[in-house]
Structures are given as C-alpha cells and as structure tokens.
Image 1 (cartoon, rainbow, N blue to C red):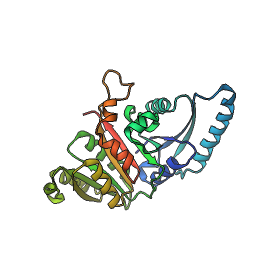
Image 2: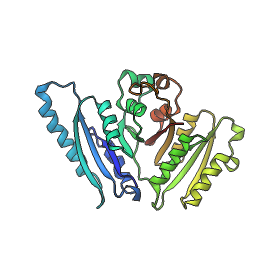
Image 3: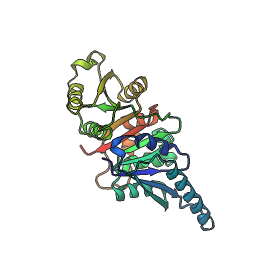
Image 4: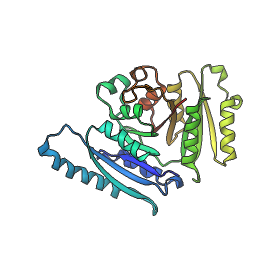
Length: 277
C-alpha cells in the first residue's frame, strides 16, 4: 500500500488529474494525500497575504476535485520559499511513496538555464517522481510499462510497479526491453524478460513483453507510445555526488541520460525511480 502521496500543485490541475487515475487502484485506497502549493520567496512583503489567499484557494480547489475513497485523507500544505528546495524538503520529511508534479518537458541544458523545478527535484530527491507534461494525455490506468534490464534500478522499478497494480483488476504490466543489436531483439529468448515475466506470473499479474533495439531512450518512448501504455516507469541509478549531495550532478544533467531523454520525449506520464547501485 502507498501511505504518503505528495501532490505538488500549481493551479493547472494536471498533477491532480493524474492522481485521480491512480486513486482508482486498490494500492492507493488508504493513502494520505499531501497537497502542496508553494509561494515563491521572490515576491515582495506587501503581496505575501494576497499570494497566500490565492494559494489557499488553489489547494482547496485541488482537494475538492480529488476522487477520494472512504479511507483516503488529505493534508493541505502551503509553503513559502524556493519551490525546488521546498519540494525536496517536504518529500524527505514525509518519506513520500510517490511525488506527483507537473513538468514542462524541457531538455537538459534548457532545464538548467530555466532553473527547472522537476529536473532539480529528480536529481536530489529519493522519492519516486511521477511527471506529467502539459502536452501529455492522461488516461485511465490500464497498463503500466516498465523498462527492464539487468540492473538493480530496473528491478526496483518493477517491484514498485507490482506494488502499484497489486489487487487491481484489468491492469497489465508491460515489460519493455531494449538490446543493442537488432538480431538479439527476440522477446521469446531474452533471459531478462523471461525472469521478469515469470515473476509477474507467480504473482498472478497479467503481462506482455516488448523488445526493441538501438538507442534505449528512443526505443522505450516508441514502445510506450505504440503499446498505448497508460504509464511508463523507468529506474535510474543514483549518480549524485557522494560528498555534496545538495548540488545537482551536472555531469549527469549534461550527459547522455536515458531518464532525461524519456522525461522530455515520452508521450505518456513518466514515473522515475531511483536506487543506489
């Protein structure tokens, strides 16, 4: 079960729309929904009261439009400060099972120059982060695609997907595997896919396997799009600085990161998970 959900809202309703789809799943039936809106600290003191009133209205509207079950609870959180720092801090304090927030879907360098909140939070938060871009269509959860390889990060992502769909009827897990060579793209003979599929079979979770070859990020996005997946999950190894963990790993931000490519280019909501390998 998911106990603590952190929903970061800006008034657009996009992250709340996504949460409403998740709230239909049995794993979300007892969740506490923490609805966070942040007043930036760059505003002048005369406008603080006005911004607080507006923020309270935003939170109230988002809570009223949540499709809560009888065992769900909500906590309004109105904070002041630097948004990216506040989101990380609140997620850590809550030990959030999932953090849900919007994303403009910018590329790496553009995100850095624009001081992207979602990019910063992904780098520094341990919480699984579900991103919803403005141009992504949010669907009822019928299938969850998980990118599969032999890494610990991938296995953690699969375990979270199992936890998410546990007890749900008519929800499948799609296993997506990308290999380097086209001649190796045979789902029936792939040991990584076979092991993951066997795990799901033992747990009576329906699944389908998909395999592609070439660039991992591009192929994952293609498979998610062509399979009409409702949600895409991707594990990312922890490459943050071990000494200065309060600073973004610029090498990773500017490097060839699969998670960054998927975050920007996927046509479905993306749930990014992180684990230390």
